[in-house]
Amino acid sequence: MKTGAAAVAIIYILVQTFQWWVFEKVPDTGNTINDFLSGGNNLNIYRSWLMLLSMFGLLYLFFTICFEDFTQNKGWRILAFSGFFIFCFLELFIRSIELFFVQGYLVDTYATANTEDRAIIIKTVISIQQLWWALYFPLGLSQLLASSILAGLYLKSTGIDRLIKVIFIINGCRLFIRMLDSYLHIDILGISTLLNDELYLPLVIIMFGLKAIWLVKKARLIM
Image (spheres, rainbow, N blue to C red):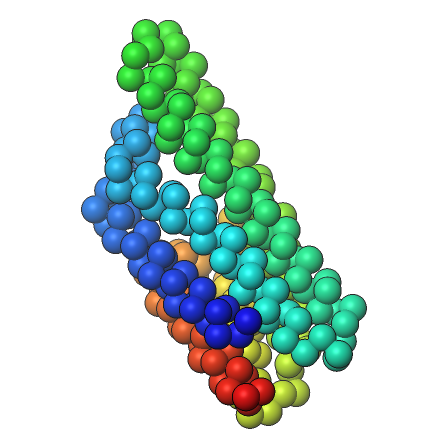
């Protein structure tokens, strides 16, 4: 399971890298209509499919990490996995709506709609985006709590287990800063935009790369 989960971590890095590349090729323009229609671009469709499918892989990855040593702190580990489960479930919900409803149905409908219907479609898209923003609060909070629990469980760890502690401390801090900025408009140290834009992909590579290393090392210890 650990080797398989390590492979999932590497695949997720590749998926996130592809998403970053797509965002570079088809960037947001700030125009609601243009950005909505660009969602029907083949690159964006591929990106959405990969991100949607990757959530199933993340669920397996988090399950493996949370229950790596189930004999210790069972209750806390179940609680941590519950947080990651909520995160993955909400991501699946949001990305399914994005792919099948917005990028699929609404984009296709907009192409043949009259002016009045097009205005209704754009209002629907804006409402869905606001719904997504609202759902990202429980999504981020559940992952923040789960990351904090795992960081706490490995707080006094030594050896290779120090990697997993560092990973979830970084992730917890990143999510805390992001949520403060997004929902309370508090930008600690003025680095929220930096974390969410320029440093987003590098942090994904670091965190999931370290997860893969940790999982492989733990698998070898058992052999």
